[in-house]
Amino acid sequence: MISPPSVSHGLRQRVPLRPALVRLQLQPWWQPSLPSRRGIATTVTDVDVEKARQYCENQLKHGDYEAFLLRQFVPSSSRNAYTALRTLNLELARLPETVSNPTMARMRMSFWRESVSSVFAGNPPREPISIVLHQAVQDLLARAGPSSATSLKFWLLRLINTREQHMENRPFVSLDSLQDYAENTYATLMYMTLACVPLRSVHMDHLASHIGKACGIVATLRGIPVLAAPSQPIHGPAGSVGNTRPPALLLPLDVMAEVGVWEEDVFRRGPNAEGLQDAVFKVATRANDHLITARDMLKNLKAGQEVSHDYEHEGEQEHVYSSGGTDTAQADIKRGFGVLLEAVPAADYLDRLEKADFDPFKVKASWKLPWRLWRALKTHQI
Image 1 (spheres, rainbow, N blue to C red):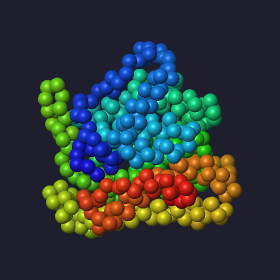
Image 2: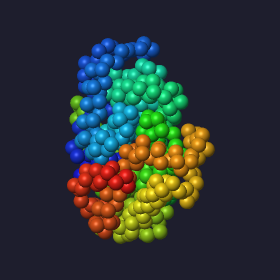
Image 3: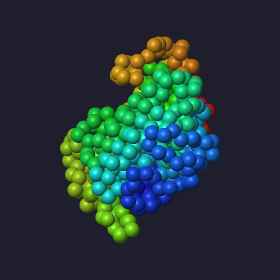
Image 4: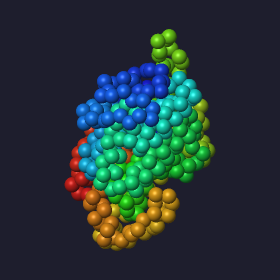
């Protein structure tokens, strides 16, 4: 984890963000083939898609390196979608750091909701994330019809809405509420990747739910050193417009109360705040429990056995399944195993956090992650 400025909720950024005032459109990055006007369809060429893909990949390489690595292992049919969705997630997570006030951030969120509607209507805005997502949606429609695309849109809007609800970086009320946030963000990103394969499976969604919850909790822990420090001022043509946010600590309030952690103490003393490591340990344990559960499930399903518990979201919208036998599960796991590799970076961080005695300010950078991903892919174990 680097020093600020960075992104909220733990997305890694290895280069500083370029300060900029928020705009209703992204910075110009190419010369569009045709002008885009509201209500008029525009042509998206292969050259446009390739330039947009390169832009998104570069954003991931410097802002979310783990996603940059993982995109190579997701099924090829969902790679464009994965690249676009992870870049969008990075964009949404950066908003508190890159806009001058909450009103501008909400305007940006509205822009993305409108962009999603335009993408699924076949008329994407002339900006890279929408261009790549449009290509992914068109490919998905050609391969699987409208059902999978409908699922993708549902999950995508849920991601945007959840990010908007948490833009102000307020602490989570409880550990369960943090877990719900992780389900609606990181698990939802995995559901979208599976939908683009397309792969609708109760067992794969169940695995994705546990892994996604672990990833969301880990992201929150990783963000502690960044968010607990004051943000850097934004500079515009007229000079500095001030800091975008005050320091924040997103650890669940029930956990902080249990171990006696005070937000102001963390802001003043950082890693020396009393009880901080105890609170981090309790939260990290919940993430690790989800990873252990996912590993046990994967082992049982590969052996043709039933899992030990039901999927809590089965029957909810976009979680209705026609069948779910263990024979089908084995084939589904083989098709979509690359999506489950999201568990590897989460486990890698938890290992490093444990070695740092659960002090998030002292977690060292990982150099083993590429090797761990390769090993997981070869052994089909997470």
